[in-house]
Amino acid sequence: MAEISKPWLKHYPEGVPHEIAPLEHTSLIDFLDQCLEHFSKRKAVEAMGKFFSYRELDKLSKDFASYLQTLHLEKGARVALMYPNVIEYLVAMIGTLRAGYVVVNINPLYTARELEAQLEDSGAAVLVMMENFAHVYQQIKPLACIQKVIVSSPGDLMGFKGHLINWIARDIKKLIPPWEFTHIAFKEALKTGSQHHFIRPSIDLDDIAFLQYTGGTTGTSKGAILLHRNVLSNVMQIEVWLDPALKQKPEQQLVFLCALPMTHIFALTACAMLGITKGGLLVLVPNPRDITGFIKLLIKHPNINIFPGVNTLFHALIHRPEFKKVKLPHLLVTIGGGMAVHQKTADHWQALTGVPIAQGYGLSETSPVVCVNTPLEKHFTGHIGMPLPSTQLAILDDDGVELPQGTPGEIAIKGPQVMAGYWNKPDETKHCMTVDGFFKSGDIGLISPEGYVEIVDRKKDMIVVAGYKVFPNDVEDHLVQMNGIKECAVIGVPHRKLGEIVKAYVVRDNHHLTEADILQYCKEHMTSYKRPRKVVFINELPKSIVGKILRRELRDQ
Image (cartoon, rainbow, N blue to C red; front, top):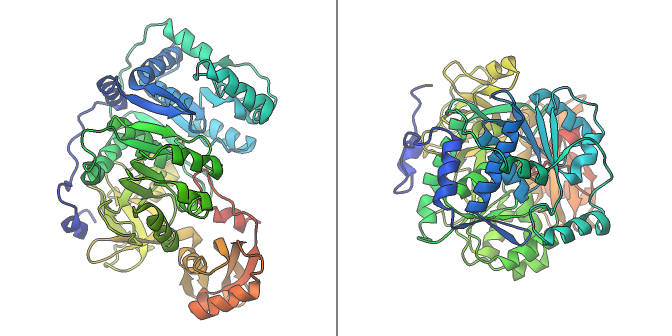
């Protein structure tokens, strides 16, 4: 496998290297220091209508780093961050790295049980959170590992406007349930940090930068150990891949839309880190589930250049009549990741925006991007493009033997963006790595003779009907073509004779649609073993923080 062919290289866009250059930065600290200083006069972030410059982000994050250093934590201490897309998250994330500690991103939608499990597993010494989620932490038992809890209010860094924001959040919209426990206020931590001398820590590329917990879409969430070199490498890989498209806007500041939560690895790398690399303006969307508010924000920002998203987000936007008012004349790249993008959604998106969705693929374990379509494509391709520079891909059978081109099997990945392993799980790390360093993704895919990669489905989601393999993505892609179906997800359920049968969960936008209608449609469009035998109508599908459909929750019902 170490000598696998790379047929995709001959299809690389002009100017994209086959390998990334050696890393010039000694750590993410070095990288952040340089970017924050180099772009100091530029606007860095727009959050709730307020702009923050790179100079302000430098000062605030350094003050936060200085405060953490007053706690005298051990080297490698973990600092957990529980935030939506607000300026405080960026300050705390950058400040934690600059202090020399490890960032543990926590899904702000977590229940008390999920929060407790992640804090315990990571051994976090500090928890930094937005006040909106403090009541969740209050529900869990005291944890010996937690030495300090830092809590911010929604308007902490918004100046005079912040008082109004806090009043609306607490008293008008009732977004902050009652809570009470020992903590330090975020603003107080910054004030304390500003009074102490910042000491630049000794950190190198092989130190841990993030414990990035997997989405847990097929089982228990695990902490992927991402080193400074992993994240820096992936930022460089994405940058050289997108540059041919981004050069269409020379000598101007790029504008990144940060709608996906930055605590998720996709937005962390493709929005926050890439945006900082380019000296871009990060437009933060605290709640992308508020589609009405999101569309109003888009109408106010026709200057957006880079729009990372997921299929469910694109789908929700294009099916709102008011989205037709959105004009994005400067949009250069729309990146689709996190889950499969449906052809129908992609075609509708391009018709409305004029820009195709460049579908990509990645995992928490790969920092995250592995493959992506070139943004120079004129139309949605349906596949996930090609491996990024310095990335090797192999398709393996169940015995770890490489399969020929065009044959579906498990995707295995090797490259500088691949994690060091799973936190405190040596057996699981050993199980997912081949002897020559390929990470076994658990995803089923194939590589065409031209080197284009196609995702078939998650290995654990595959359904076996009378010996035939059925991939949920394939069935779902057919179903959403039917008029009256808004969204759907399919799973396998046990069957006495066939082993498993296909069960579909459907969200309707036409309430006259019946199960009989769907079964008849499937009979006309799918081979027999792929057809759903049961249909359940549901008001909403369970989804992860980025909008990925959680089939495991449907299986648990």
